[in-house]
Length: 113
Length: 114
Image 1 (cartoon, rainbow over the protein chains, first blue to last red):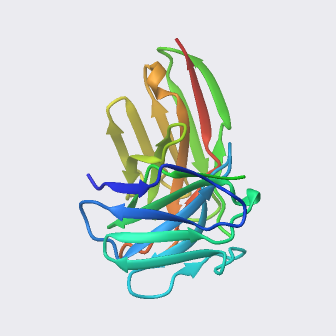
Image 2 (cartoon, each protein chain N blue to C red):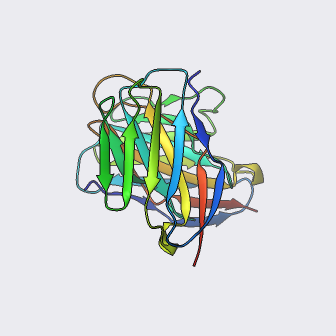
């Protein structure tokens, strides 16, 4: 089946720094990837759609200057949380589509001190 | 916007019992997906349903796509401790190709007592 990886699996950073999270599709090409955010005991919230070779599209209420997305190749999308603050602490999950379904990465736990 | 009503919110059962959970919506969908999420992990696709009335099994799991296309249920038979986790239903709200945005239900937290 389709495999999606994320790196790092967890990161702790100081407030004000930027953090980059990578999402890779390992055995298929993905022109589109998705980034989600999940708070404890809550469902997944779609943040943005990452499009290979073009700008990402963001969901309403998500700051595009805060969450920078780059989709430079058909197997890699990156999410950079800029000037991170404690309220950005969350579980970030990416996914990539395969025909009619999406396969999810294992997630990245971000903790901002 | 599209909302999925998933129930129950949580379940506490004994090992060996059967489990049933469902999702309903006021909107019609062409695809229903069921995912399981273990703590600290991303969701894993369990079953995908593409046709109204479709009944699909994956081991001890069985899911059905409601005939009205507005609901779906997931059954787990003879539960075991490793069934513990959060189960989500999801539907795509895009159209065409792989550019589907998924809408998730709020999840059902399953606890299995050995």
